[in-house]
Amino acid sequence: MAEAAESLPPVAEIYNPNSPEYMTDPITQCLALAERGPLVWYEPWQAWIMTQMEDIMGCWKTEPLSSDFYDWEFAPQRPPEDEWSNFERAMIGHSLLADQSHHRVVRRVTAPAFSRNVVDNIQAKIEPEIKKLFDELGEPESFDYIEAIANHIPFISITRMVGIPEKYWPEIKKVIVTFTETWNPTISDEQREAARQDSNKAIDIIKEVITERRQAPVQDDFLSTLLRIEEENEGFEEGDIITMILALIGAGADTTLVAQQWTVYSLLKHKDQIDKALATPDTFSNAFSEISRWGVASKMGFARYAPDNMQFMGQQLRKGVMVLMMPHLKDYNLKYYDNPEIFDVEREFNPDVMFGYGPRFCIGAALAKRQLYLTVSELHRRFPNIELAEEPERDPTDHNAIVFKRLLLRTHCG
Ligand code: HEM
Image 1 (cartoon, rainbow, N blue to C red):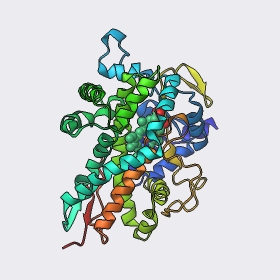
Image 2 (image 1 turned 60 degrees about the vertical axis):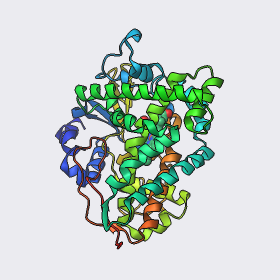
Image 3 (image 1 turned 30 degrees about the horizontal axis):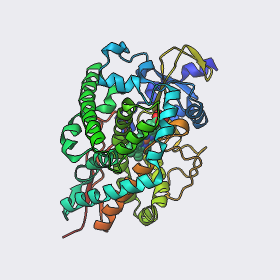
Image 4 (image 1 turned 90 degrees about the vertical axis):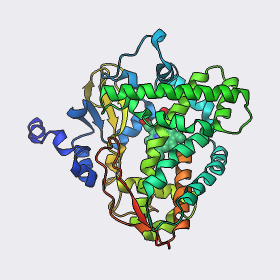
């Protein structure tokens, strides 16, 4: 057995999400990695990769590992409290990610802010913005969907959702886009530090918005709801509000951008399924799971860290080592899906883990699906004959996902 394992090529040779081969065919590498075992050591990232769905769901549900970036062995030193900048205050002191019991409190008290009717309210706010984007686009013969539409959607929907007034948009936009880089393990320390400084500036702006909103607390947006929740709940403070807003931006911006691109691309590759996919928000919800499965856009996974030296899934983990859960490895596995190469927006997903599972299930799932549905429906309403103008070239510079350099569409207008 040991001999057989030794004769296999090193894992980094069969799996490299930054390779050109992965960019055009992630499936072969994902399947090969999953075959190497349930917990595979990945030397280039100094991380264990968890490959099997049952284990990933167990880990999501019972949380034996830490989600706190500062528990990572290569994270910057956790500074003493008297040296905390706004960033540490938000990421350590009130982190959604860190302390599990505080996380539960935050999720419980903020749940009403994410209910279905709140999403309906947010829809009413973002729908006109989406229409405005298309109005500004007009009726060109062809256009780049990423530049003209997709790039604007995450910012519009999150700022509208939270209730950040438009006057702050240009300023906050400059410093918010790098937020997810503050804990990205695959980039340099310098890049992470620059992102941290940007985030500090963003937090200053958010604090200004909060102060302003406290003086005029009437609006029915998310921020006003959070301020009400703060008043009513002892363990929930302004720091939690800032962390929550950063988390929404951090978790909701890149994901949405990738989702926009793949949704438009996959449906235009399977035009016979567009009507079924866009029939209602519910049919789209299922279609989106299929779009994500079919595209296998993910390059990374969800990071956790060993809180101690510990035995885990038959391996000895050193304290602070990263464990990456990679649910996307299952996407073309016959164990989970019949005819995985076939794109079928009515495919059944049971369970559907597109947005995670358990206590850290995605807060923005309903909003993400709704804004995608609205945007892509508007695209097809305005341009019923739209098609891909070219096979889009993939962008090798993105660390997290397979994305396109541009997504040129032909409208057949004019
Ligand atoms: C298509 C887009 C999206 C996908 C596929 C997605 C997926 C996920 C997944 C899988 C998780 C669990 C991560 C983990 O276990 O480490 C998660 C968490 C989260 N998502 Fe999303 N998400 C999307 C969009 C959004 C949006 C638009 C928002 C906010 C407006 C958002 C906010 C969050 C937050 C705050 C968490 C952390 C929850 C917690 O730790 O309790 N997401 N998301």
